[in-house]
Amino acid sequence: MPCEPAARQIFLTLQRNLINAQNVISNILPNYYNSETQTLEHFRFPEIFIRRTKKAFISYITREQISGIDTLGPRTPTYTSIRKACRYRNINMDMRLCRKIHGSWLHQHGITAEEVDFLQGRTSPSIFSRHYLTPDNSLRTRVLDALKQLQREL
Image (tube, rainbow, N blue to C red):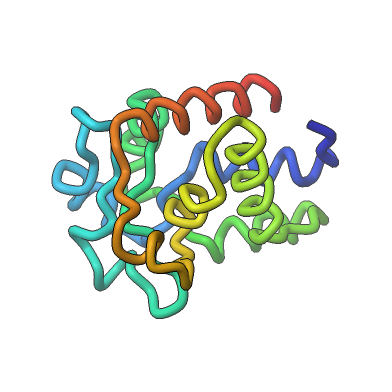
């Protein structure tokens, strides 16, 4: 996947620092991460993670990634601190690009458009997506496999 160096650096930074909620990660992690399903359960903390425009209820994340985040504890960088660090280094930082890379990569590796929309918090207007699309274990496995490939590629 061709990727300019700045975009690659931004994506890797975000990969290492997936959760950008200020100072709450160390307090909520035991109730937020379901290690059995390798899922961040955003729906458990709607006041922090469920927004008016994007409603991502779950995210799949490997145990290795979560352990890296857990070691940061309250030092987990915020969205603003990542942006400022990039600006200080003259790196053009566009979070939408990271979202596009993530969604495109998943779709290219067999995740359906409806599933990508579900994972990224976009609610489709279709009746199927709104009422019947529910994640299963195969989705988790496919997403985590695709993200491992992306991490190797970067």
